[in-house]
Image (tube, rainbow, N blue to C red; front, side, top):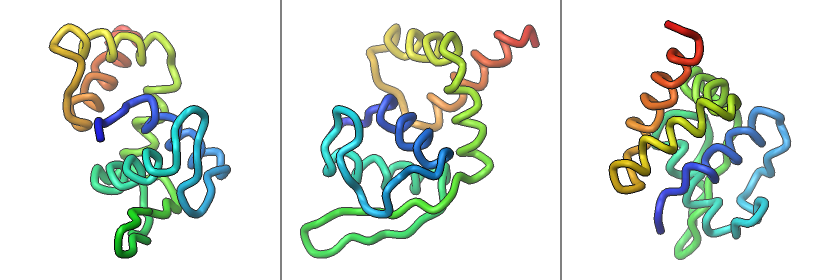
Length: 116
């Protein structure tokens, strides 16, 4: 499965609003399997705290709260021009980068937006 930054953003926004379900359910246009996979990526990147609920054959994770890194991601991603700038830079290099690189692009774009 390919990493989807839009889905990661959507999950983190839901978690911030305390409206994320305990187990993975379909979210917007994404199915439960895609949501579960990306919840795991979020945990691996230390953007949220949670637990691995996976069983034989079924992958799932619960997310309980954003970490400081998760709040930083959400704060930067909330600004549409910052998000668009980061995505544009990714598209210029082939359309895919690691989550840590994308976080750095968000940070750089936000700093530019603030004039720093």
